[in-house]
Image 1 (spheres, protein in one colour):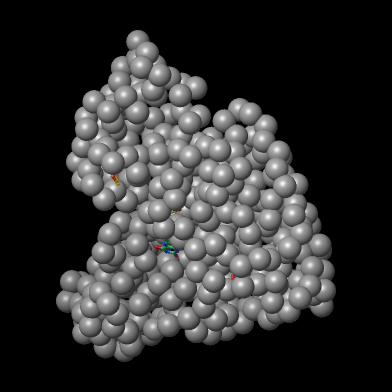
Image 2 (cartoon, helix red, strand yellow):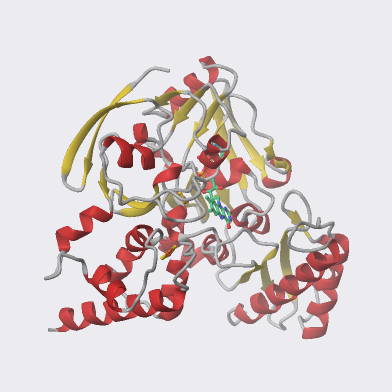
Amino acid sequence: MGMQRISVNVNGADVEARVEPRLLLSDFIRHDAGLTGTHVGCEHGVCGACTVEVDGAPARSCLMFAVQVEGAVIRTVEGLTASAGPEGWSVLQQSLHEHHGLQCGFCTPGILMSLQPLLTAEEDPDETQIREALAGNLCRCTGYENIVNAVMAALAQVRSSRAA
Amino acid sequence: MKPASFDYLRVHSVEEALTALHDGPEDSKIIAGGQSLVPLLNFRLAEPALLIDINDLHELSFVRRVGGALRIGALTRHSTLEKSAVVRDGWPLLQEAVRFVAHPQIRSRGTIGGSVAHADSAAELPVALAALDAEFVTRSVSGSRRIPWRDFFLGPMTTALEPGELLVEVRVPLLRKSHGHAFVEHTRRNGDFALAGAGVVLDLNSDRRCSRISVALLGAAPTPVRATDAEDCLLGAVITEERAARAAKMAAEAGSPSGDLHGSVAYHRSLLEVVVRRAILAANLRVQEP
Ligand SMILES: Cc1cc2nc3c(=O)[nH]c(=O)nc-3n(C[C@H](O)[C@H](O)[C@H](O)COP(=O)(O)OP(=O)(O)OC[C@H]3O[C@@H](n4cnc5c(N)ncnc54)[C@H](O)[C@@H]3O)c2cc1C
Ligand code: FES
Ligand code: FES
């Protein structure tokens, strides 16, 4: 099938490529853009490992085609370090580390990209809302308790720095 | 898995979409949010020759009140519906239902037109729209049609949409400001497709007797259906716990749920009874002073 030329901004850098229409955005990110932080678990929208931000909103990159993001702005887990703290990690990354919110880490990029909007939300999400936001991401090893604890600690930190 | 090869066309106007549907290969497919279609492509359960991408048709992305009724463009994302003040103020049932659809990362892409056209028998929006007596507006190169929901959903993943037809708009009639509503469902995990669900909209007279009611069911049939026996049982009555329980039993008995790997027919039927009862009682409580 005819290749199509796309130009897309990924983590602040413009990426140009010629792609087959059937190339999934997840594969484009991993193989063409060379950003292997975005993981691929199920390729049918269920596990959440492939979640990235498309024009500011979290979306499943396995349920989009690269041709569809022509002209769009994508942020992947690698882009989070732009807001990095002293360790070179974002607030949520640091908090997951401190609260043992990951083991193998396969699900972690998707969780980071899914929950990032909670940290900048205007209203303060409570634990139930955190759990709801997390429901679209499957983790096979950590169990969700430590992940929820990490998110709550990150939120508390963001709130106190906002108040200061 | 990876999808089979296809051609891809990104259209920039409804006319261009209609022409592409008309002139394109027979097995062309519209792609809206892609949240139902792309899994099918990845599994190779669908192998269309051409994908017509309508995501640039901003003219199909709107939520507005026209002469008291609600009009929603087919490309309106679930996440837009979820936050819409127009929907919250006039048709809160729709907002309650859309929050049950999948997860935020899926609601950011999925559209109301896609949900309706895909017609999954466990989808929430078609059921809510059945409770609200919605109709669907379609366009093709040969004209436009308005199809009431009853004539639209024909079977699981089967609708009255003809080849070459694009769903452009969902229309919902005006409700009384004081109406009560509730969408109640049972899922195994948050965000899953529901095993049973019910959408209820009702009005009460000044003596708190029910003057209008619709009870739409999810999981009672391959398409959204209305529980007419239950509606008749409630019309003209004061909605007590006993009356709601009786109506719910009628709805569950009239329904023909199918068993699946999550439970038997009897289990699905008993879930149906529970969600219908809860939805009726919740809607009744939410009626503002008539
Ligand atoms: C993990 C997961 C969980 C989900 N859980 C739920 C759930 O709990 N409840 C629920 O209701 N849904 C659920 N969904 C589906 C989701 O709601 C989809 O957004 C929706 O069903 C389809 O909308 P879409 O815009 O993505 O359509 P697409 O996937 O783009 O299209 C679906 C079908 O509709 C056709 N189509 C789309 N738009 C039009 C149009 N304007 N005119 C004519 N034909 C059109 C397409 O050709 C295709 O056949 C889930 C999806 C996933 C991946
Ligand atoms: S790989 Fe995309 S949701 Fe699982
Ligand atoms: S840390 Fe291993 S899957 Fe979540």
